[in-house]
Length: 169
Image (cartoon, rainbow, N blue to C red; front, side, top):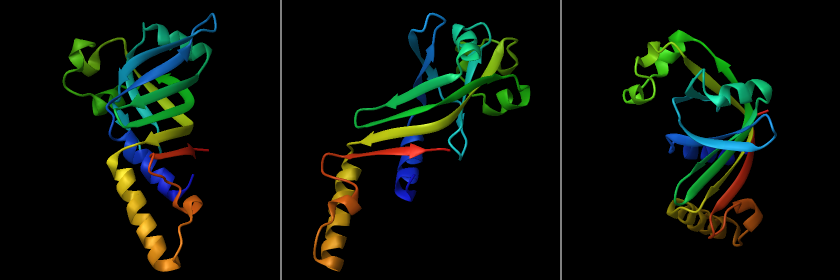
């Protein structure tokens, strides 16, 4: 992953507070559901809260490879990796947010509350925002002033936005 791609990916990831988590059902079908992002570590690991009785818990135990997607009007990203269910009461209390009582009435001490830890192996993002267009103008102007020509491969961005792949391994 390039330094720019890494920075851009994490910047985009921080703009989203929810994601669609896709798991594989026992019959091989793919199932997606929305989930609130509880916390993201600097290395890209994402923590979500779930109920131990939820179907996704068994699906992850059977097939831990998952995909998560985040999408807005002008920005999207996807992550692939492995998920695991952990029961760490201290972590649950640390990442708990007000308002989640709607799903877990007893709060961070809810008896069937668990942490779903998503460890990404790779990802991809798309950014069609105005900031990408401004970056293109800035980089193109700088290139013209320093070299007298535009090198579109080096710029790695165009007026249609920016797309890049990242690897966490």
